[in-house]
Length: 197
Image (cartoon, rainbow, N blue to C red; front, top):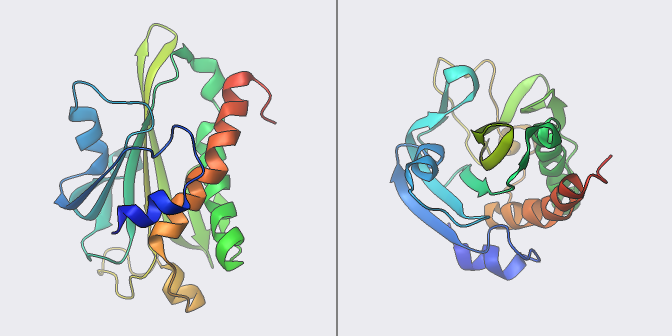
């Protein structure tokens, strides 16, 4: 993963302006939450995860290096929890738009946090919040997308797929990450301002 290529394609003001890339880590989501202090928009990317986090306590598989997107970033909104009911589906829509924008690929959303195609899971989103009463101090967003992976283990091979397997396109992961944040940041600002529809 070449983070300079992400930076070169970014138009954001805050999000993903600080990026850390790990070759192997237990979980990008866990690593973010381990930090005593994080800056708004910090992005952590891993080439491989040994214990990736999915929804409902499930595991997210990222064993094959240099093939997929496994990343987590933090938002520090300090705002009422009611504002963020639609955050996960907003993130999903922005992922879909990023692939449409660069590769003209039409992915689908399985509400609220799965990216699918041909009824197979291509990606997933995990949002976890830190609360102080009704105020959200931090939101940890984990995103996993199967991009170039061709083979899946027996446990998930019937329900999971990748962009490459479905479309025969070798997507540039760095450009997808940058495009996602370019699309997401202005929509997130609208969400914070109460103007997102």
